[in-house]
Structures are given as structure tokens and as C-alpha cells.
Image 1: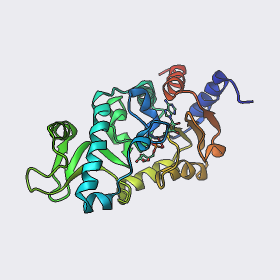
Image 2: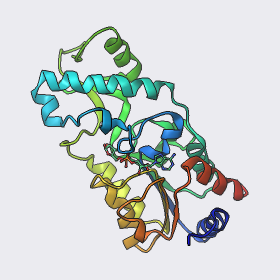
Image 3: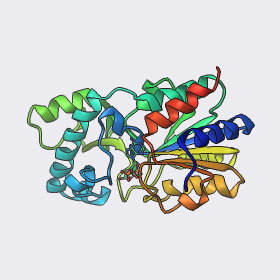
Length: 255
Ligand code: APR
């Protein structure tokens, strides 16, 4: 029988107080309460769209058009989204000295907008807040990209050099950013406690982050509505909504 919610909150706070260094690892599930779809819940992004790989994007105008249709839909959610209680709770923990590094798979920028300093956030899948030209490297903000998509452009070429434009995210088939992955592994291997919040832990190498922390001796607190393949390595599991859980934990800790 799982312990009551309050008992698990008390245990999480005890682990937090006892920890020297604290890390967080987040996925799309931390942003669903902000109105951004996650990927693998029923009705999620991969229920509605096919995964377009980096190789397909580069090689096929049809694939690029398909990809931008998905992105235009995601941009609508993203441009309306506000940080939710889980995002602000993590910022409160960081401000109080209870969070040293935050690794996120998310591309929505809500951790930074929720108050976690940008230098604390490691965006291992890049960011959707900008797009980049694969020819000259020119970066374009999402607002301009969305305007051009809403204006009927089916695929985007650089206004400077005519090169191919793609979101500044890591696509399937693209290599992971080395420097950010090094920082992420250092963050996980160096902590005594890691919160895993809102990820199905299906996509490697990101999904290995909680295991790296566990292997280095950290305790893990999983906050995820549904089961993950790695629940057995967690010290505490919450299946309640991330906003409720993280808001309660941050609320118990005096600043
Ligand atoms: N509170 C807690 N958990 C939630 C909530 C919530 N409010 N909403 C959703 N979840 C959980 C879901 O149950 C699911 O297990 O969050 C998890 C989200 O999992 P995914 O949709 O697979 O998202 P994520 O793990 O971030 O995906 C990893 O896959 O497609 C790629 O690049 C994409 O970064 C993404 C990666």
C-alpha cells in the first residue's frame, strides 16, 4: 500500500533537507499544466503527428512541410503558455539554495520564465524559442517564425542567405549537444538527491540521467502521472500532478 500523500511529502522534505547537492530532471509532463501537450500521453504530440527525423528534414521538402505543420501547432500552445506551480516551485527551491542544477528535455523555456536562473538550466534538447539557419547560423525568434508560418510559408528559408531554417531543437537522428550533456552528467553524478519530474523515460540518452544519479549514490524522487520503466530505482514516487506535488514540497520548506 503506498504511503499517504502527506507522508511522502514529509519524506521528500526530509531527503531534501539531508541532501548536500540537489538536481532536477524534467520532461514534457511538467509543462502540461501550462497547456503544452506532452508527447506520449493519450492525445499527445506523437498521437497527432509522425516523428520527422533530422535526415528526413534535410533531405525532403515534403518532410519539412510536414514538420512545420506540427511546429506551428506546438508554437500556438507555447506562445500562450505560462509557467505553472511546478516551475515556480523549482525556482523557489533554487532561490532558497535547495536546487543546484536543472536538466530539462523541454524546449519551452518555462523553467527560466518560472524564475530558475538560465545558468542553472541545462536544455539538453535545445530550445523552441528560436530557429536557426543551417547555412549561416542566423538565429530567428519563434514569434517571427510563427508569423511567417501563419502568413502561409510552408517551409522556411533564411532571409540572409536563403539557407534551410530549422528550430534550435535536437531532432531525432541529430547528435546531442556534447557540452550540455557533459554538464548534465556532471550535475546528475554530483548530486545527493534528484527529482525526476514529468518524463516517461523512453528517450535515450536523456532517460539515463536518473540512473547516473542513482549509480552515484543519489536518492531519487519520481513525480510522474504514469509508471516509468525505472520506477523501481526511486526512493519516493508521486503519481499526483507535478504542480500539486512540487507546490506542496516547496510550501513546506521555509525559505
Ligand atoms: N504531472 C505529472 N506527470 C505528468 C503530468 C503532470 N501534470 N502530465 C504528464 N505527465 C507525465 C506523463 O504521464 C508522461 O509519462 O509526463 C510524462 C511525459 O512523457 P513524454 O510525453 O514521453 O515526454 P518526455 O519524457 O519529456 O519525452 C522525452 O521525447 O519526443 C521526444 O524530444 C522529445 O524531449 C522529448 C523526449
